[in-house]
Image (cartoon, rainbow, N blue to C red; front, side, top):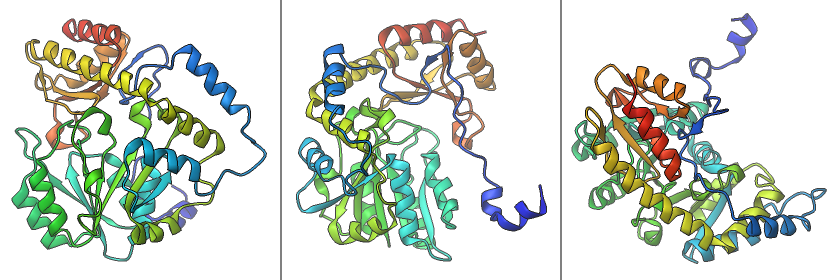
Length: 358
């Protein structure tokens, strides 16, 4: 490392590894929790026609007012709550961290959890505190979490609901106790809301420190990179000051608004994914040596025989199937793989490859 790099770059950044996205060319891609379905051809033609009137020579609406109105109507966001748009959930997490970052302040979340909470805390110069889930079923360890809240006094608590990468929902009464005990913001990350029937979005306003974050990525719009944050107006007005100008481009605004006006197509795809999730879980449950964990998301976490996760992951790749190898990323994820629920034929190919893995 050069002297200049060592002098200029903060130690906590030098100690990080960049987020890696594997090359999936030629593989059945079941590693990134994407909706596997495209739009019907007729809808694609309508979308392209709608884009013809978008002016690429002009900056986008800085607030995304039309898109926000469509989001409010489509997602049932309470009228009294503020609404911010982000370039995916990642930008919203960064905006939240930047808004509260001060020397000595901390971000707290649950481990295993979404890796960007930890990474963005470090980007913002904040300490990250991870509270382990219970090893047997990835449920909340409420006594440990309550003690950590009291001891660490975090500025932000992130709760993925349902959780990534475990797929489970935490007990609603337990997370209410977290909201009430937290000294700072509590952010419910509901990225997987389409795949569960529970949400804290309707409860916005019940607590002054609660905000809810979602993304359209899992609904089938991952390529648009659009997330949104809902919560008390006064709070979101301050967080909005960390947002870069024109962060949501004209094509994303127009495409997302168009898609949400045809939400019935996305909802039908979601129903198909939920049905395939049940079938895939049942098939995995019947495989010797494989333990799938119940999921309220569009992926399933599974534990394979001790010491074989890497070998099985590579075997799946050789068979043309890419999943996520979580073994070695966190102690509670030892021997774990995560598979996205794909189309029926993709799931069948994965099951055949997994059953034939040496």
